[in-house]
Image (cartoon, rainbow, N blue to C red; front, side, top):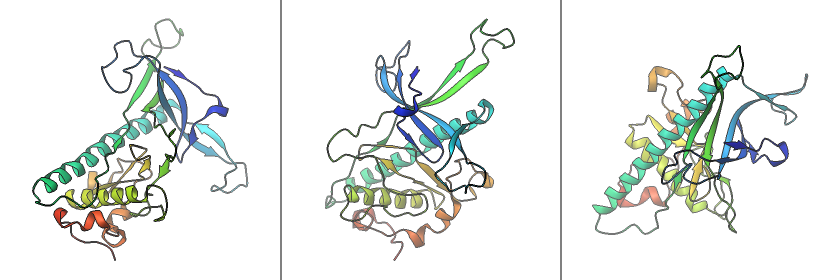
Length: 265
């Protein structure tokens, strides 16, 4: 694993993580997916916290990046991978629902169904080799990184976009914006996930492009896991309890073949 740690070439800074260029080569590569190519381009992510100068507001953009100790970093990154795992499952639930509805309805839906998925991802954990340091036991964890598939936005008209925020179950985009219809589809997926989980969970913070998504958040009802937060700082329980009021059904939700209960205004 090779990581470009130069601040000049950083890919981006999010709310909780920084993203860097990286290259991955596995000794026994899989036939497909992450690590299947030699020196495969990847994105390497680290959690961080903001360090503001004394007297500066915590919401200020004037800050330096602070890094967590390994003991704090490990659970944060394990949780990030867990979120991606569950997001893939919840999105798969939607496509299963669509497939069943379309197969049992004589008329095809009057719109195209976008096909999107979440990035392939995994954790890279490095260990101290034998003899590295006299005071360190062989096999002790040295570092951990979140590795993700690259989202290629090189094509004209293709942009990295946040489609839906975790504070609002409706598109961030305006109707005239690029990919607004795609954002409506993502809002529809939230409707399906909410219904199929009995009002317990849905994906939010949809971002990426129209082919690949990354950095999702799972919104859960407080009853999930007995109130313990298993999906990180961005899990806002009020988003679930207020979903039926806040969600505005669109043309995907309203197609009779899906037979979804109407929510919102």
